[in-house]
Length: 324
View (cartoon, rainbow, N blue to C red):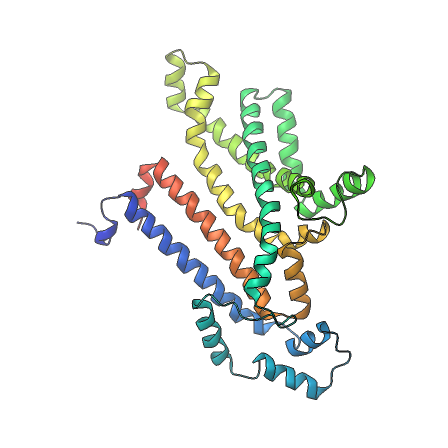
């Protein structure tokens, strides 16, 4: 008899999935509470910033106090938190301080553009890392492997925004590929998605290459060689399935990073998604909009991590025995 709860004993897929889902819900809720708690600690008066964002020049103390009352900022933090939490549980993210429109409506208007860009970037980075890692291991210590390693080192050394600025300078401005003021279309998303994908794919390629090399040197690979299996068959049928789980985990973790880094990338390419929206909200101290964006980013992260965890539980039953 173990100390594990009864519904988790036995290592079945459903209890394991329920455990992961509960973790995801708690993580998203904790992130939302943390964001709410940190926002009032930011310097400056949000009421004054909101008035400036609405076009009020040099607002008076009376106007600022009236704005504080209208925005509900005159209430105690406990009262504000209870009100915010109650609205959140009903699916209401509140009203934007600047536009006075529902935050959920504004996010939904911009989310498709961000989803298009980041989805394409995710596809590019996954395909690039898979192909390059397999090529590097198949031609280990030869010129294809050296080129792949150079790419991964450059990608690891340069931040995403540097890749984005170089692409904007040489491809968009210099060669006329794409547009500086982008529209949320598939064609317009190709260049920024390709740049983001190349940057993110560098670290994934490095991770997958290391896992494949370790698998190719393992005992089961030696047994396969002794039985007459070709190196290509060992790589694809034995090494890749065993190295894929850390690769999937990296993808799941990176989804949250892609969402969180959207403001900077979208600002560089003038992409009309959530990035531009949250940058405006930060400048105006628009609490509901900022909290809504962070909540979406947190939900995206925990959802991606949950999907990867469930896939890992299906592919490797041994992981179910490690659940607390």
